[in-house]
Structure formats: structure tokens, C-alpha cells
Image 1 (tube, one colour):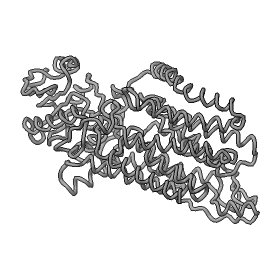
Image 2 (cartoon, rainbow, N blue to C red):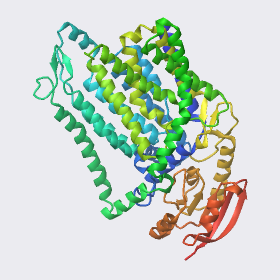
Image 3 (cartoon, helix red, strand yellow):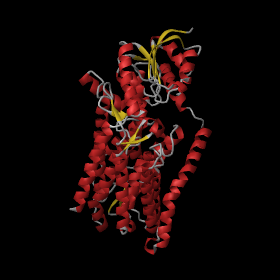
Image 4 (cartoon, one colour):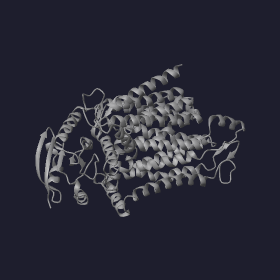
Length: 589
């Protein structure tokens, strides 16, 4: 009865948190994802008119946007629709994850994992954007591997009695895992670096036990060889990749595709030398050590004082509990940014690896299920996380949730460890802190522009029109959004080329104008590539220029207006607050 009540409370809180995340807040990363998808389903073509660095991740949002536009013929309420769609997608993956895990592990553990996954959003965004999709598709692939490789509980019981019979395993799970990995790579192209690690996991499970002393391996009567299993996954990825390439080459020349790909990969906002990236990560790592110490030191003190807790498992559980409590304390303080320090993600992934290692030392006959969790969860999760760090200009804190498969494995490995189960009060404390922190983050906190921390009590301004209609934004963001909607409606006409200078790319969708920029990324740069773009597409030379930056931040705009190959002869049409609208009378030759 108590278990049912607990589950009901958690599910109700999850629903309330979902409602909140769908109607409150609007950040520039979400605006970028929505605007980029809108370009894809209207007049712009990928790799030709579009040079966005994340454009390969737009397929899911573009598909959903296309359906919406076909039905409504308008963009009003588009963001609300995309958020609800994202919530449904995440709920379906959570349900699949729950049903898969409970086949081979404790049902309570499956529930905790499913709720944790459903309520974890990398950027506090529910819309299908690239960070969410990386987590979704990597988790889908992991779940499919779990379906294929893990031994169900009923069969595991028979196996202990020596009566197990191996049922034929459907290759469909390997095919679906290949599809999921392909989608993951499109969502985050650097994720391709994790594919060899996943194939290594398949190789390491080549001699897995399937019952009654039977093993799957080359020449085995129960199942196919590891070579065919790896070929199925890799072949699915290769076929989808080839199909993706041919889809674009049917409408453009190879040279055009290569040119657009090069422009996509050389975006100015993502240019960072390897040495600079390593230095930035090193500096962040040193800052995070303080937060790690705040979790490790009290856990270590308690384990040393209490003799019954003087073991590695008690220490790990206490460390995780203190890291989760510390995160809530940090959020409740006067910290400016929301996506910091989030070390509980990294510590949970590490705890899973350590529990697996100590389990192997104490019990050489580690079960197949735990091997699956380790290789496809912990190891694969770390490789996906590293692939994001190596290639992109992100941070250690922000990418913590990219370890999702490692986090799921960490929870399950802790739960399934026999000696951890004996420490039921610590396990319960960890579960309550984990779900409590996750629901607090999703249900109370709001991520505003540039990752600024807000909460549900902040004063809001409702967006009155356009794709964000019905969303309650931070007051000034909503105020400027509504002003911009009026001005663009007044000064632009259908197919009028408009260049916007600022971070809120959603403003491009507040009218029927043509986008004059090669990229709608929320951290734009203005350089010679803009002139190159207009040389290639002269119909995109702007007639209207709009900006929403403060007077002291007009350096980029002035450089843009005065720089030789770009624009000249501008006239200020309107200026309200920080919003300025210019008419471009000509282009300097």
C-alpha cells in the first residue's frame, strides 16, 4: 500500500512538473531549435541556404512542425505543441525503458529509473532539440541492447536450477538499436565516436551465459555469432547513413553538398582551438573539485565514525546523497546560473562503475545482466559524454545528463548489488534524494536566456502572438517579444528579406519575411561569411535590419553596418526600448 501511494505521489508530481515546463520559460537554445526546424519545412534547404552547425539534429522537430503547419496553416502555439510532443515522446521512451528493465531487474528499480529519465532534461527544455535527442536516442539504443542481451528474471531463476532453455532472440532489437544510434549521430554528430565503444561492448558479451551453461558465440546453437550481431547494428547504421546522403545528393551536386557541409562545420560561434578547450575544461574541473569535496568529505567522515558503515558501498551511497542535497542547496542560494555544478550526474556514473568493479572482485561469476549494464550503460555513456566534450564548445557541468545510460546503469547496479540491498535505509535515502532533486529541478526551477536561473515565482509576461503564444516568459523577454511582433508586422511584408542581430532567433518567425542570415544560431557571429552568403544568394540581401541589443552592446551591429563588403545607406525607422528597426537602402559595392 505504501509503495502504491509513493508511486502515485511521484507520478502526480511528474505530471505537474510537465505542465509547468510546457508553459513557463523561453530560452534562446529552444528558439534556435524551433526556428531552424521552421526553415527546413518552409523555403530553405539544408546545406544550401542553411549553414547552421546543428542542422542535422532538426529532423524530428521539423517533422513535427510540418504536421502542425499542415493542420493549422499558422505558427501560433507552435512551441506549446512541440513541448507537449516532446513530453509524449519522453513518456513513451520511459514506458519502454520501464517495461524492459522490469523483465530482468526489480520492478521498483525500473520505476525509479523510468521516473528519473522522464524528468531529466539537459537544458530544462521539453522541445525535441539536439541535447534532448542525444539523451533520448542513446537511451533507446541502450534499452534495445538490454532487451536483446539481458536474461529475464523468470529465465534467470530457471538458470540457477539448471533448467533454462534459451528462447530465440529477435534481431529486431539489434536493428532498432542501429536506427537509434543513427538518429543519435544525426542529433549530435560527434556521437559517432561512441559507435566503436558500443561495438566493443558487443564483442565483450560474445561469450555471455544464456542458461544451463550455454553460451552465445561463434558456432553456437543458441543464437548467432557476435560477428553477425555487430554486422546487423553496423549495417543498419551504414544503410541509413547512405540513404541520408543520397537523399540530399538527388537535389544537389556533390560540390554543393561538400560546400554546405564545410560551412556548417566552420561556424564562427563554435570555433575553439583544442588547447583553449582543454584549458577551459581544466579550469572548470578545478572549480568543480570544491563541490566534489563537499560531497566526499562528509561521506568519508561518517563512514569512518560509524563502524557499520565502514565500507565502500555505504561511502558511495552517502556521497551521492550529499551531492544531491548540495545541488538543491546551491540552487536555493543566490547562484546566477542554473546548469551548475550538477556533479551528482558524474558521481552517480562513477559509483556504478565502482560497484561493478567491486562486484567482480568479490564474485567472479558476474551475471550477464550486470555485464550488459556496464558495457552498454556505463562505458557507452562515458564515451557519448566524452564525444560531446571533445568536439563541441560545451562544459563539463552542462553535459552531465549526456551520461544518461551510465546514470541508469549506476542506479540499477547499486540496486542489484546484494550488499547494497542490505543497506536499505541508505538506498531509500538515495532514491528519495535523487527523485526529489530531479522533480525540484523540473517542477520549480526555470532556465531563462543564457542559462540564467529563475523559478516559478518570478514575474512573467505572456507571449501574445506568434509561435510562443501562450508561453509565460521572463518579464522583459516577453515584453520585448511582444514589441518585436508588432514592429515586424508593421515594417515587413511577405518575403521581405530581414536580418536580425541578437540572440532570439524566434523573431524570424514573427512574420512571413525571408531570413537573410546563413544561420539562426543563438550565439551568432558576423564576419566575411555573411557577404559570401549574399554573393551566393543575392535575393537574401536584407531590406530590413532588426536588433534588440542595448546601446553599449552595439559594437557588432556598427561593425556590420560599416564593414566594406556588407551593408550601407541604412535609415532608422523605429526605436523602442532596446529594439531598433533599420531600412537598408543599398549594399556597398
